[in-house]
Length: 115
Image 1: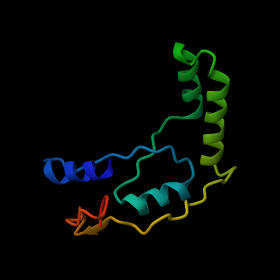
Image 2: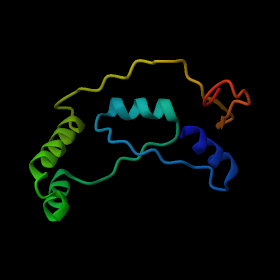
Image 3: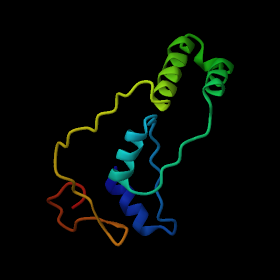
Image 4: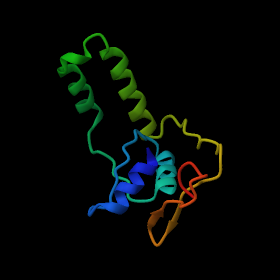
């Protein structure tokens, strides 16, 4: 999947890709930025609005208690009341390299993704 995104980035006019993650803790957002580069944007939606949207959505019937608990957890982490983020251990060396701000795809097909 990442290979196809990189090909699309180098062959289209817009050379941008968005990675959307739910990262409440600044340490986790910093980790994602170090891994992927680019700019981090945090949506400016407060906890009360998230809960109101859950309660207003008929699709959340039967799941509201669980969903509002996840919202409360997310905002507790965002406020620094709970810190749980641990960077994942590397399972393999990075296969992507950045050259002049561009992601380069390996011409060596023996490597499955980037290199």
